[in-house]
Image: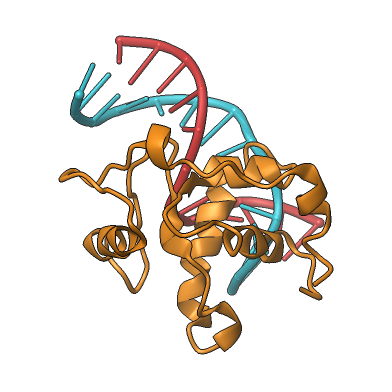
Length: 122
DNA sequence: ACAGTGACAACAT
DNA sequence: TATGTTGCCACTG
């Protein structure tokens, strides 16, 4: 990514979440050295709505980002909670009736600081 | 420049 | 367990 804005860094991290795993808004913020900026991560995901035309953003697995309780709390997107749950199930992640994921099972380990450092290169 | 906003998180009831 | 409250901070207009 040539851009180094916070949002661009967020998207770069989300692209690294493997299929079958999930992480939380807050953990992504922490990985980027901005603990407490969880709300911005959610806002960045929401902003994807306006970038649907740009192929650059079409392969971002946004569905793998949920809240710290493991629950789906999507809002203001072209998708709804049920659709996100379905996408996660396609990933092989179990989603309960009340739209919750077992973080003990599916939480992504995250990126090491070395990997975070390299995000801007590509 | 600056106040409003939100796909959060932690804590208090 | 389930709501309600408060702090949070980068983006937006």
